[in-house]
Each structure stands twice: as structure tokens, then as C-alpha cells.
Length: 127
Image (cartoon, rainbow, N blue to C red; front, side, top):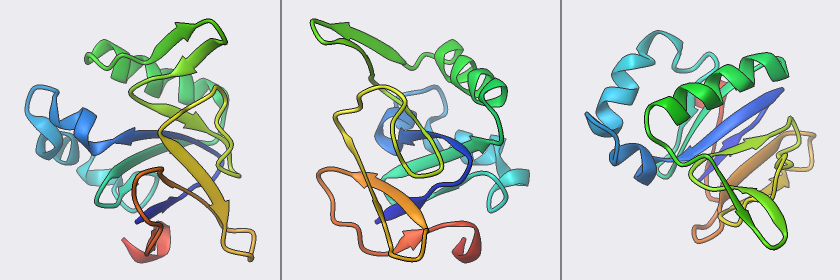
């Protein structure tokens, strides 16, 4: 499965959310009022978004404060670890080894886990 992206997006593998207190069910409960608006998920990925970089910074800080290991550093520089920030075309703002992006040919961009097939693309129109 895959997640449609728009504006700025924070993408988190559901497996990382399961490690947090309350797990993924608690995350869904917390975001109940905005699922299908700016938050959606497939079987593997959770997406939250904002229209600008300030909103994304707040979302990243929230997940960091909750215990996700956000940014790593290696000999090549910084990279996204347990979440990834991508733009409207699915381009990662830092390297992200576990996420790929593509386009459906109609200017609808999406991201997906490297180890899973694309399949259905989940977005605002099919939550």
C-alpha cells in the first residue's frame, strides 16, 4: 500500500508507533477528529501534514517528545530515522532509507515502504 502526499508531510511507520505507550490505537484515538482531513494511514504508514514548514516542525517535535528517534547522523550526514518529512512530490527533506516515492501519472504523488508493494494508494478521497 501507499500514502498520497500533499503540501508537507510527516510519514511514520506504524511499527514505530506501536512501540509508544498505548501503541497505534492510542495514536488513532488522539487524531480521531482529523483522520481523512490531514491525517491518514495504510497498513504500514501513518501520515500527518501541514501547509508550511512551521507546522511540520511542530509535528516533528511532538513525535520526538513522545519518544521517536527522529534524526540520525552518519558519515554522509543527517538522515531521517523513525519518521520522514517529505514534500508534496514525496521527496524526503533528508535521506530516508526506508521510504520511496512515485507519481501515478496524474500529478498525484505518493510514498511507500521500500519492502512492500505499492498496491492501493490511500489519500483524502478514499479514507
